[in-house]
Image (tube, rainbow, N blue to C red; front, side, top):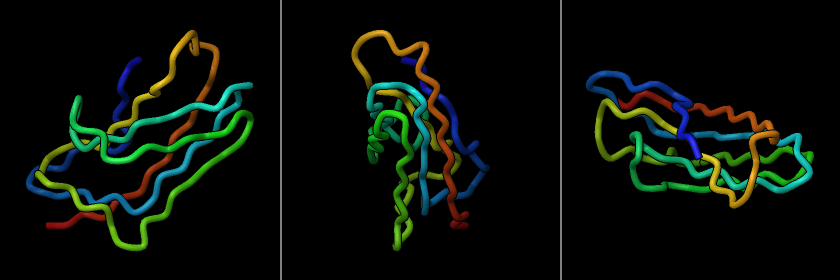
Length: 96
């Protein structure tokens, strides 16, 4: 499945995740993996129920371990999901 940038990298800056949310209009639950850096290690997973929304709020920002990395999302789902629109929203703080 394609990996998509949710928040673009900023030079010399850590982007610490504080919120992620998603909506799913399909009839199947969708699992979305979140990463710091393209093709990086999965830092967290958001499971969005069928025809519903889900969100995670981090009371302590989820720290990034390297500067100038994007925050990305990738649907981690077996089978055909091309007709399953998923919308992801994220919020991060810049830690300089």
